[in-house]
Length: 370
Image (cartoon, rainbow, N blue to C red; front, side, top):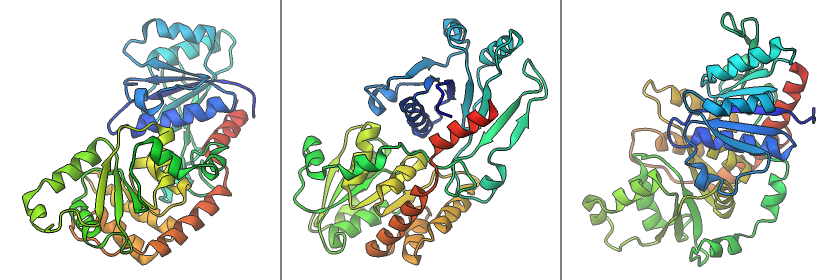
């Protein structure tokens, strides 16, 4: 299982950087386990802040049409594992090159379609199933569906082997000082969101009542979250409801954070608001109470996905109701029961830590299919 193989991971950046975030974490995790990884991506610009130091064993290549001279890299290091992330179609030149090498006597690569994360029942039914290729230069090959997930019947979650040790050694005070965040003991809340309609109510609650009657220091992620907060606090109607200014609420706007520092942010805070696929997994590993804003879909399919996730958490009624409000069209939020939320998330994390992680399961799967 631990033999070093050449992996080629393909990623198309759609929006919000979640796709490249997952693909980079996977690439770095595999490389740390002794694998060689080429990450083909159509827009790698986010890696400049997401992973500024890169990672030994990971080569980032532009996925342009056509691939040009980069295709020659397949001659010097033939692909042994092909991964298409989130249903993107691998460059046809790569498929043709792999077929040529098989005809020349090389072993065909293990071809994996790495799917989106979900807690819905279909994930266990579909995980590990083959999809035979019917036509083209690789007719007769199989593409394997690999589903990340939260149960033993799925592919698990991304988790580096040393993650828990790094968290145990984390120094919150030192990290906040490095980020130049002035902290005087307030409750720390991170905010990484889209534009939830209930955001104005959340800020109003924190300003008037804090969190558990204690002042709140809100740490706002760069991008859409920062723009959404600034839009609320500049709205005249909202300002009229704030006769005492921001009251118990103070706000810091963060720069774009590397993936390492995003983990640090989650570890530092008492409550985390996260969005999308990568950050909800990192919030789970942080073990702090969190609220997830799922990516909204026009057909409302995200609501079933959210309910499945809350069911997996065995979320207490207050956490379930808060998620439904945060992800819905309504404006008003219910009170936060941080104690029960904390107990819930700690229990889920402990259960998930007992399951094999995504990188381990991918290595085992590839070893069996090679």
